[in-house]
Figure 1 (cartoon, rainbow, N blue to C red):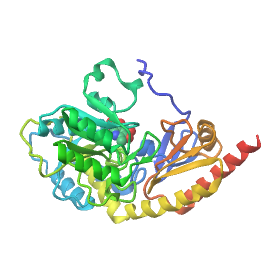
Figure 2: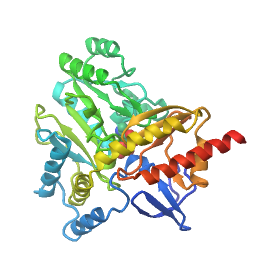
Figure 3: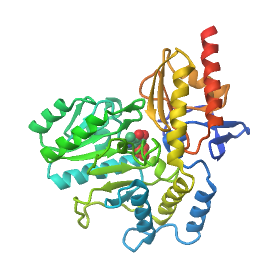
Length: 382
Ligand SMILES: Cc1ncc(COP(=O)(O)O)c(C=O)c1O
């Protein structure tokens, strides 16, 4: 059987990984500054992660959501504590798209409305509603195009209000930092304005923290850089499981649950919850949020000093994007082939994304800065 060929691949075959490093089949060691699309939060194969999953596997890996699963409550308690949102409710699922799909559905249930306002440049996933609120016509099939979605520019509160006034809007969905769009940080005033408008017009505000959540930006959620912001729904995945598939929606206490409203076979299984708990335990014991904040600001600082070839540096904590004057593909390839460093691309051809594991240290980041400098200098002299 052939694989359905939808992914352009980098020519590397990871076989082993530990912390911020990956080894390929030939034993070559790479520095991972991308974490497989921002997924690796506490580091590859973290010993606590491995032993907690193994221990759970030896007891019970899965039973469906028709029985008591106490580890779900343990996970919810720990999430409430670390995120500072103990009053929210938790719905568990398996991926970022699924989290957004459920959040959109909940907003629609809660308001009785069906339209959604999304932001230009947004990426929210590939399932039906999630891709409909994603600003990329190339990944939308005619089947997905039936939703009532209205895109407004980030920062344009007047545009958002116009839609709220004239349409039947259930939700506004926004990333506090757009990831796939090249790390575009939303203004705090814009986010606060969205919350105010949502309240005023009876819509729900959904913060998509699938890429920016779980400590990546130096706060538990990226929207927490905006003081006092209280979303109705917050979606999570990626860093939540450090590679184990798990996603979730945090739901404001004002939204009431009803039997049958949402459901999933796999979501919240014992093994996934063990992975999710292991992540939170390591985040806490190793102070990973603090590390992300401090290493991230030094890296952003260092990037602004590398070369005039770099035209813009954006981000918070270890969620960083920078633009080059030239297209980024050749630079990324050189970093990979010559310096053994994984970096990420973005929607814009000139952008490089950095989303390393949250425990990364100064020495590794300095190695990257030196390698980037040498790559840029070499390209300039060619
Ligand atoms: C902000 C954001 N939301 C949602 C998703 C979709 O997540 P998943 O691929 O787990 O469905 C992504 C994936 O890149 C994302 O960056």
